[in-house]
Amino acid sequence: MAHVSELISTDINSYLRSHEEKSLLRFITCGSVDDGKSTLIGRMLYESQMLFDDQLSALKSDSKKIGTQGNEIDFALLVDGLAAEREQGITIDVAYRFFSTDRRKYIVADTPGHEEYTRNMATGASTADVAIILIDAEQGVLTQTRRHSFIVSMVGVKKVLLAVNKLDLVNYSQEVYNQIVSDYTHFANDALDVESITAVPISALFGDNVVEKSEKTPWYSGETIMQYLENVEVRNQKETSSFRMPIQWVNRPNSTFRGFTGLIASGETKVGDKIRLHPGGRESTIGSIVTWDGELEKAVAGQSVTITLNDDIDVSRGDIIAASTDPCSESDQFQTRILWMSDAAMIPGRQYILKSNTQTALLTLGRLKHRIDVNTLDHLPAKTLELNEIGVCNISLDKRIAFDSYENNQTMGGFIVIDRLSNNTVGMGLIDFALHRSENIHWQKMDVSKESRSKQKSQIPKIIWFTGLSGSGKSSIANILEKKLQALGKHTITLDGDNIRHGLNRDLGFTSADRVENIRRVGEVAKLMVDSGLICITSFISPFESERKMVRSLMSENEFVEIFVDTPLSICEERDVKGLYAKARSGQIPNFTGISSPYEEPKNPEIRIDTTKITAEEAANKIIHFITN
Image 1: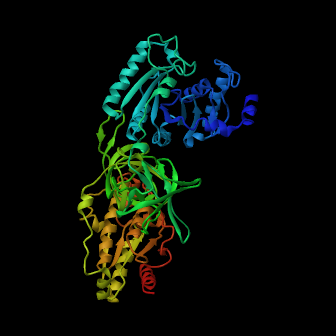
Image 2: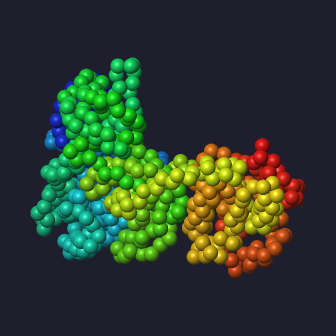
Image 3: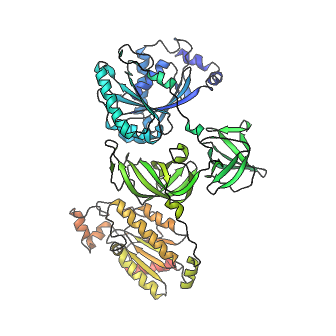
């Protein structure tokens, strides 16, 4: 490894500067398990004789630096190294590898082929210009081949290089190669929105048609893998799209300077250009463009800059600066395509967090329009999405955001879905278009307010939200509580779980998705009751913390009082007034909370009631004391 120390002792900065003018190509390797992705990457790095991995580690100045071509020992060590990294857990994230040739610089997203890591592959594909889809010549087109290809197309990759690998195992058969290309092309024509598919027969292990043409495939006259990558022309959407810059922070070091810092997502801008701020539509002009190295007259996509404006207008983190000649659209309701990335199913009606660039909003998933079967391309009815499934779904947000469709601007049209409780990323989505109904629905200002209704009733409206297992005593306590409140002259209403299912929610069952929708509807009704000035008492199992948190978020501060009726499951089963537990234990009632469906206990309820220690009447008195003091 003497060549490494020699390289380190050279002027690396000078070397890197020699590569600054080269074009950059990002590509991803995709395919099923053991299709040969690591072997191909290893072969490309080895034969290009340029090896980068987060730091510059080798430089080709002559054939002695890394070894002569064909040194299979060195190549085997390189491939083994890639495999060892996978065993060490690097597959949890996307591993990016860097290398360069005389013409181009390359970033390759190295992702695993296992189905459980589909989320990693989607992450890598989202920034790729080209996708290399590998197919094992012995296996042909597999389910994971179709899934990866569909996701590649979905996230906007327009160039596909189909690498039919392991030709050495089928004696470099042209017939096998042609059949695989035919099968894949038939699938792609129906499923993929790509500009071109170029097929290459290869053996990554022996280097056939990777860098140099192989004599073992005389029937193939096309380019090698590296020739294709060197010559392929790709459209840089970030450069051709209109100017967009999400604001990451407001920079105000002193009273005379106020700048807005961010990474330019697309397009370009220059001093004096007219801009529009989203959301809201305020307009101004660019006063200056400031960087660490000084001021610029013009800035382009990919640069991090601080922009000052010629007008003193209100700007905050999360706003979008856009060209006034082609501004963003704004909406709070969209049709989207979603790839689900969590072991816990995506449940319509549940609230999540949407993050798009620097914008965040509360997201409520509507009912799925359909799930896409990546094997048959059929649109299948579904209530939920499981891990790695793709569906088309309407979403609504709690506020308007600036956006472009993903087709027109991948940066402005993409988003991630975050779980509100765990803060984990659970999905990625693409905006197809805004729903026109969002433009036609507006809040109607009413002269009679919640405050005036409350004053009329001489009370502070609240939701008293009972939660607990079936048979815990929720309804009994709620009934006594309402009678006591009415005796005190309070105006009340009670929403009971069983009663609501006779009317408003009679169309819902007891699956997780239906339970979520049940509570979403009840939460909206309860909010209307509070707006009318009432004390609204609700008695629902409401098993999921996420939905209870969602209802709380609908209310103003101190309007939501959560009562956890903490009765052990064994006691609830002993009571079993309605005979439900016995039926659930015998399998007659599926998805029964506490038996075959989970109950998530409140972490910090306002009041916890232990019915093994106090009576229902004492519990009601405890609640009245809490809300009246």
